[in-house]
Image: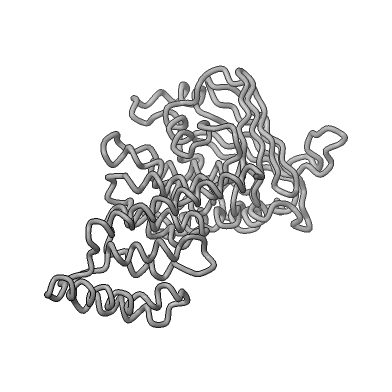
Length: 400
């Protein structure tokens, strides 16, 4: 894992000409990390796993070093060094529970000092003298780290998979990357920036530093920065749909409803397994995009105890149910055992509606598309349901 971080190279854009070895060493970011001794594995779960399963497998690992002893790790562009560290890392007298100390030196940008405790809480502090390098700046904007002052929640495993989907489980190194990310769980962080002072606080089962290293390693294999254009413009929402949690993921579903990126439909279908608020927004987005192939997944996601999913799934049936065909018959049969009474009774109500239409026109209605008035009513119902969901979510977030 750390070897990948070394191979990642500088965070500056790789489009520039390669610097000389001396200049590269001077311009590359470096990290000096000290891990406290942890003989009983009481530290953050992800760091414990990395110490036992990843670090000893690296060429830089000293043969006589116990993974539970205090460890010093030096990482730069082209150098990785692992050595024993003093049993007690430098720390204030009141920080006996501190597990990790690090110094991140980013040329031009500044130096950050990192402290972390055994529960995975970390704090990064330092003075930033310039904006982050282009590649790092793009990555931070993609994740929305700098967009708002409030806390941000990201699933580390989903984030690594979203950044580097083609390499997950492709080889032993990729498997280690994915497993380490899974052990980190969900990272919650908040950036507090009052120029020139930067302060970042947060926690996960791997702190903040380990998820950051994993992200840099994944980005080095498949850069998260995409080309500008119709598909690249919405890439940030695709990434957030995969890895964000809470309001950020719900907002990603809303933005993907109007995205012209061909990957949006698949991302929205995946969100049908998310929390009820995001699920309702994803259903509405799929209906708006007329994604008929997603109808079976929409119906499976609807549940009586999932807010607004029932009326939205019914709206999806009226809008996306195909004309008479084996596919339509299969969808209607699947409703017979549905948990929702509203959806179970839909075939009967559909038959009544068609009979009523036939009686009015004297002909058998060929399909299931509602009349313009009914279609407008369904659109209104779908929009109103999403608005109510957004208002309720806002009240819950703000303690109203």
